[in-house]
Amino acid sequence: MDKIHVTGNGPLRGVVRIAGAKNAALPVIAAGLLSAEPLELSNIPAVKDIDTALKLLELLGCRISRDGGTLSIDSSAVDSVRAPYELVKTMRGAILLLGPLLTRFGEADVSLPGGCAIGSRPVNEHIAGLEAMGAEISIEGGYIKAQATRLKGSHFAFDIPSVTATENLMMAASLAEGTTVLENAALEPEVEDLGKLLNSMGAKVSGAGTGTVTVEGVKALHGARHSVPPDRIETGTFLAAAAATRGSISVLDTRPEFLQHVLAKLEAAGVEIEAGDDWIKLDSHGKRCKAVHVSTAPYPAFPTDMQAQFMALNALAEGTATVIENIFENRFMHVAELQRMGADIELQGHTAIVTGRERLQGAPVMATDLRASACLLIAALAAEGETTIDRVYHLDRGYANIVDKLAELGAIIHRA
Image (cartoon, rainbow, N blue to C red; front, side):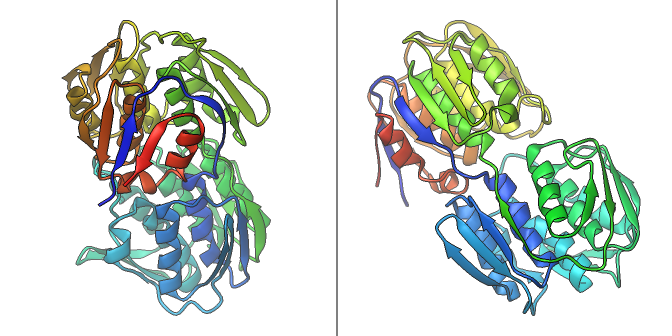
């Protein structure tokens, strides 16, 4: 099993380019099932979750052509509606196949999803929304089995805004009979991006990225071309790493408007931020950051996917701050590993009280999920001595070439 070895050696400096967003790429890849005509996608990141999604589509009968970050999906010869546990268990996003399969083919047989063990992420909103549109759904042997002659437009309100449920129901509604209104929908940029793709395929979607999404169903969708937006979490991860190491970096091919809350927290930590249409520059001027309070909430508030990275930043900052996790109940598993490196963190339920230290100490640690992996990388970059990070396959699910990118910024890092 691969490990990453990091020797802390001071500030990160230089320029880094951001890959396409995994969380935007997965729903648009699933949307390839909605039309018999090819879907052409670009800026697709080279991460494990994308590989898994494409394997799933091939199992269903799709023809996939991939050249670097460019992808073509042809689902004209789909001959299966079963997404097996063997692949779905590694990736939460596989649930996004449920809506497209059901609405186009009249049935779907999708394993209950897996992914990072950061807490319960129930599929009840997906199921309730599809049932409201007329689907007959049962759960048998760990699989969601759904059937519908043709889905019907419906008015559905989410109990809690769910990104993947919003995306799933948007895709399902695009080929339904009548109009669907989704209330309390997720506001994330990835939802808005999916709406743009669906409209380019001939769907009639309005309000994607707002609390109310309206979808007027059409009989068929056609092929389209679409470029995936940059990854806001990868952007935030590199900025946090530069701040923690007292460095200075320029981040290119990004979208600052996706990260307003994160950028505000970094400025509160004492770093200087400049931004343009597609770039962000961070300069810490060689100074240690100040501790900042963080409380996670749905977009546009502070993202849960940046909580672990700011935990590492606070562990090295001047002062004491709280980190409150309001989204996932098990997303503090990185705390024990940071404590192995000397971090001063006290847990009280969903709140971590972090008192920063001048330096952490290198140690053998274990990644427990995708963002915890990034947290440990940040801590290792700013620690004294060598840190060995085990179970880094989590990292491969969401970060494209992160070891090479960090090395180009001056990190002493290698994978073995």
